[in-house]
Image 1: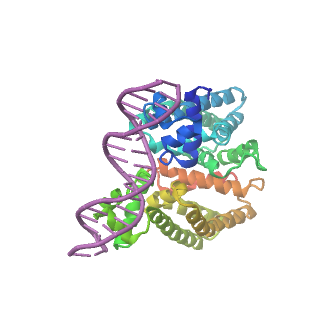
Image 2: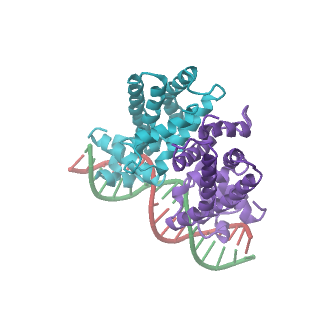
Image 3: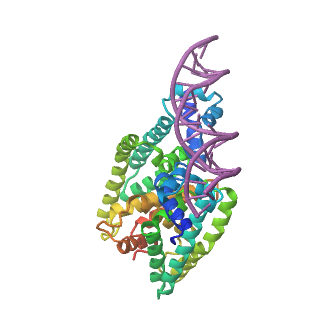
Length: 189
Length: 189
DNA sequence: GTCTATACGTCGATAGAC
DNA sequence: GTCTATCGACGTATAGAC
């Protein structure tokens, strides 16, 4: 996030929306966090819901880019899949964790048209996953009887959920966590 | 749920809290759903938060019992693990799905002392999972290098998440879904 | 771009009649 | 056990000065 008033508001929103939820966070909370009055917020955003949408929009762009880079640095299907898993775990539990948690867990607070817009942004993201899974299966890493669509959903759930229990500073690093997650996808490797 | 006014309120609460979230659901919504006035609710429950706690309490009792029965009817470690997975998938996507989704996704709307109370109820539930996973590993079904605590969390996430995308009436049944999930735990089987 | 002041709706919860 | 009526707090968003 940049250091404009708008950027500060989005950072504060990610923080508060994650910890208190969108509904419980008031525009007064938001204003206090960045040191302005609540009325001033509406100079930067038309509604509170627009703030939520912008938080989600920014984190999708950032993380799609991170995943794309991870794929580029990988040399085989196993590494590619591991890179996607590590990227998503990092998104959830690293620097963008708060915004990512908002994207995942405050979904229904968006109005329907905002949901449609965000869903469109996510589609590129999901395409990378499916392509990588197909490649891994063709390389014999994933058993042919497994449903790749279902596998992706299971992985998405497992990875998203980690934000509830995983502590980045603890004994297990993100790389090891990613290896553990990779085991769930691979055919006994 | 029984057909008392209290039971009808809890059923309506599970429905509304799941679809709109706890915060967005008003006591007036709740009252309308069961055909009474909002003031009448507070004859049955002291606060709105108490309704949430009771929904969670009931669904935990119901599903702990379902899991216990599933274990009893299983004859080997593989069947036991499959039974737990199927039970949890059924809890999320079957008749108790709405209450279960509330238990999982409205957690932070509980006051801290209610959270502690519900957490205690869940501990038996989680104990069954860990015991079953240990048994499966000792039987050689799960690779020794896998962290069972992490595996349980991954499975919990994957299974919980299914309520966002899985459609019970569709082409894939819960039994097949459970088999797909089992693949994530087992050592290439 | 931020302030003050406030409009205006809705919220959870209560009181007391029936 | 449900009703009607309402309280007091708090919510988003606006208006207009600076």
